[in-house]
Length: 122
Image 1: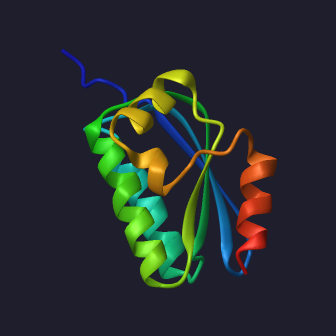
Image 2: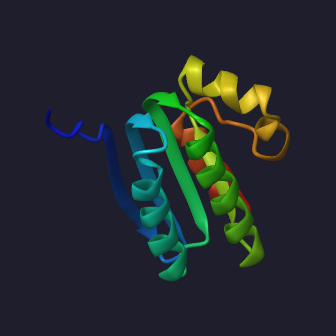
C-alpha cells in the first residue's frame, strides 16, 4: 500500500520586510499541519510579524491545523505583529467559529481586506 500523498499547498509571498502572505490550499490536518507551521515559523524568524493567511482554497481543517493557527497568532503577537485570516471557506469558517477563534482573530472577507488590515496596524 502506498503512502497517502499530503494534500496541502502553501505558497509564500513576501510583501515587505514585515508582512508575508501565505496562500494555503488543500487539507490542513494532522498529517500536514507541520508543513504550514514550518512556513509560519520561518516567516516569523525572518522578522515578518504580520502574517496574512489566504484560506480561500483550504477545503478542510481539523484541530491540528487550528492549533497551528493559534500558536502562530500567539507568536506573532509576542513580537508586535498579528495573524490575519482571509476568505476562509465555509467549512473552515465553521471550525473557526465553533472554537471561538473568530473572537480573537476575525476573518476578513477577502485577501485585499486582510492586507488593508495588516497595513493599518503599523
